Length: 128
Image 1 (cartoon, rainbow, N blue to C red):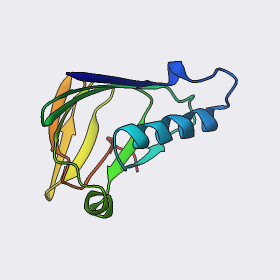
Image 2: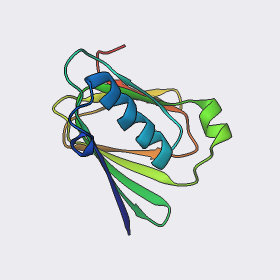
Image 3: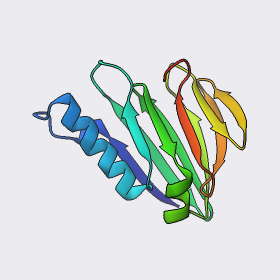
């Protein structure tokens, strides 16, 4: 089992909030995959994704600020990922995900199974 943690706690303290988010986002995209991430409010951004890979399954859990994450059909086509992602939501708010024509709400302490070959926008419920 491989593990990876991407945390704003590991970024230099002297960076402003926008730069911290951009560096965190770029690192996420480099190590996890092509996605679009956006910070959703004016509060200081904090984020920690923990990942562990087991064969064709990537386990993920998130804690931190409200943000959106989208994997577009174009990104899926250009950068196919043959694994599944089991995502655990540890944030204090639910997130909403649209996939295969269905909208789903993932509450705190719940999980969602996603395919790496499926476009899937996810955002804090009630946001953009």
